[in-house]
Image 1 (spheres, rainbow, N blue to C red):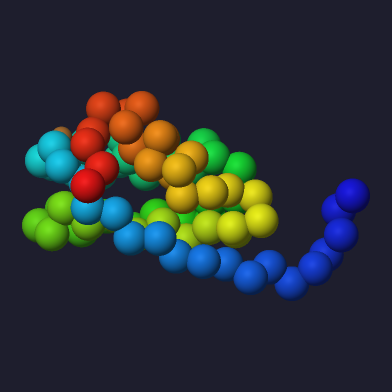
Image 2: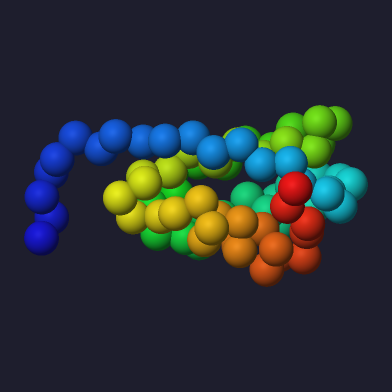
Length: 76
Ligand SMILES: [Cu+2]
């Protein structure tokens, strides 16, 4: 089960509307971190940009988008 294959990670770039402060950035990060396969999340508030590094074998782009929407933000 815990096969130690080398992970090949992908990054996904999202335009997220509604993030206005560090609290929003934290909420988005927390929502994404809760998804299995998400390695890290970077938020650029001034560009409304969220960059997610994830394992595509375990998480899909749509589940990342759903997590962001679930936190209360629009994904472009
Ligand atoms: Cu905020």
